Length: 77
Image (cartoon, rainbow, N blue to C red):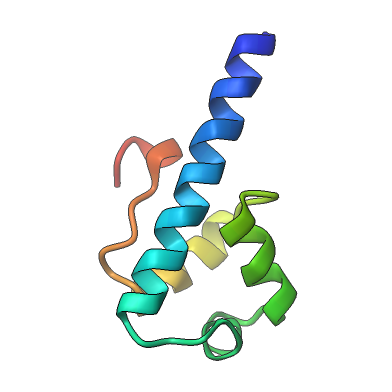
């Protein structure tokens, strides 16, 4: 179980890095993305650090703003 949690944590942190890269490439600030998906800026910051992940509903909103954003825990969607 510990190995699984470490792997999941690694995936979440990597996804956060990808989120940041995709957001920056799109020219969208953390504040603007937060407004677009209905969260506060610190939430975007936590996702990018890998401290948490968005809910499925919010993830869909993120994908509508950042279509190239991957989802490793969604079967590669």
